[in-house]
Length: 180
Image 1: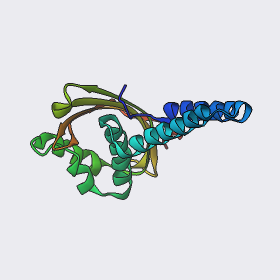
Image 2: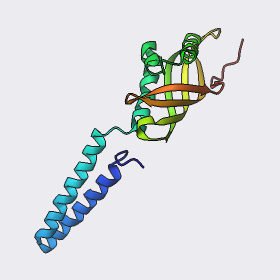
Image 3: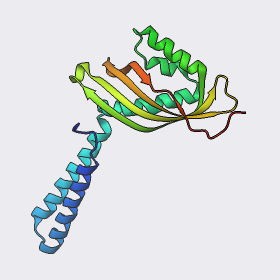
Image 4: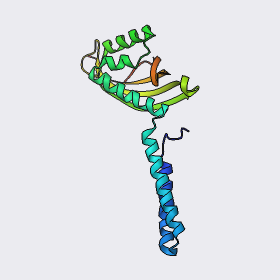
């Protein structure tokens, strides 16, 4: 587990220790309990501050995909292309084709599992997600809703993760409409 990926359990534990120390101090009146309470509060706040300031690789990836989903909804292709590895032109062509064929109105990521590999300076990652999407697809009248299982490979370069490959299972339509 990353040291500052989720500081809430540490902060809650420190708050409990501070509360118990306060209770003991109010009963016994010993200065040591007051010092323990202050120390627990400082450690708890320090953990939360570190969690807020330190962005782990996992958090960076978890923030990337919602940003890309919003870019797809608004048609911001440049934001999407900026997340792609520029040395892989077939990847960019595939993304352009997908965006041309399907213009999403809504993209919701309902499951995102991130796996990290390798040393921090040459980190590789894989993100597996389930996406609910709704939008216009070529040849279909009206908006189409679908589920997409997407697997994305990433590589850390220059402090940010770039998409190096992706694989999408065939979209499963969720509409219950019958064709005319």
